[in-house]
Image 1: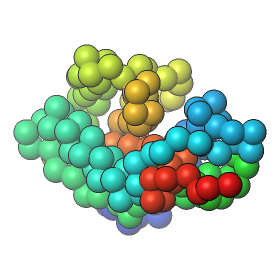
Image 2: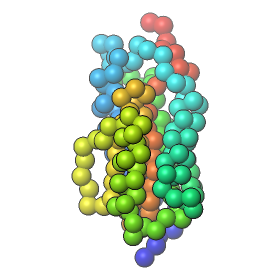
Image 3: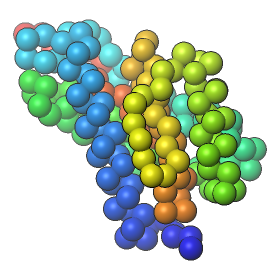
Length: 172
């Protein structure tokens, strides 16, 4: 059974996966260059730069999977960094459905991306699932990338936690 983009099950699964990724990213951001209120004191990418970089990382990963892979980008998943001292910062999330893949090879796609991403300095994150899933994070730029195949839908995502919308922390 193949569920089309926009199908209620696909929409709910996507929302749950993105919410999980954003929550994990927000928790991790608490340990990154934060002041006593939990807000980053460092300059960051801007919201636009982070969304652009996320789209580039997703497109690069899709090219590693198959020359026939194509992407259907979903709306940006940018949310306020809550629970970290205020909502001034954003967690930026990009998600794209990947079509043109033989989903029977999902586990081999996970292995391909694991090899590729780790060769680029990404570290695999802990996690287990009953479906093919890979989550990685780069220690330098803090981008978290994931690939999953669930309910006959392959998805790539890129999340960057707690950036300043204009790239600069406000003066306090």
